[in-house]
Amino acid sequence: MAGRSLRIVLAEDSALLREGLIALLVGAGHEVVASAENAEELVAAVRADTPDVVITDVRMPPGHSDEGLRAAAEIREDFPSLPILVLSQYVADAYLPGLMESAGDAGLGYLLKDRVGRVADFLASLDQVACGETVVDPEVVRQLLARRSDDGPLAALTPREREVLGLMAEGRTNGSIAQTMFVSEAAVRKHVGSIFAKLDLGDDTDRRVAAVLTYLRG
Image 1 (cartoon, helix red, strand yellow):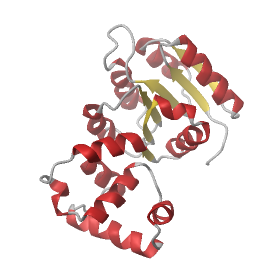
Image 2 (tube, rainbow, N blue to C red):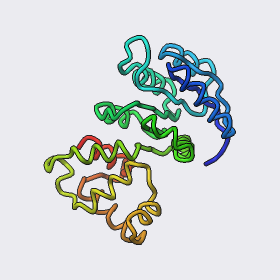
Image 3 (cartoon, one colour):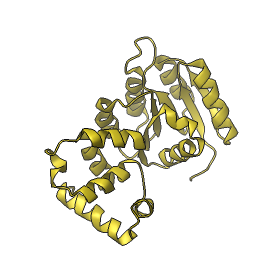
């Protein structure tokens, strides 16, 4: 599925960024079936013509707070399998647990808008979300890691395991993690298994997503 042409509904109140995103997406072979300037227009557009994926800003008119996220939650209720990619101007980690919990089996992404300028990274993240994966911006992960205290559910993890979990939160595969850390995939699988065990994640859930959610909660 990666690299396929996607039908996209885009919500962004900045006309300049919205048009820039449309040009980027169309240039990559995707179709923007509707663009919205506010949360109400976003929900209406999705209901009128269900896309393959939704891209939405966090802050939207009229309040410029979390209208985009609330619209995403409303959309997820009606279309639980619809992938959603959320864009934010800055790290707003208070939003992340709710976003992750709403993911279910559908793809979910949380990227900083600076990531859009790194076109290859942005388009790769879009493909991952469309394929049902969960992707969190590396800069978000870095800032969250810097704020972590030594207590809570992550206290039992070793520094190496925390590093692996941080890379998992970025949406990295075991192979990609191995390349980044200069270790074997077998070593990564061992770390991942240890993370699952220490966080007491059962077999009846998507343990990778559950582990990342635990990480984001701290």
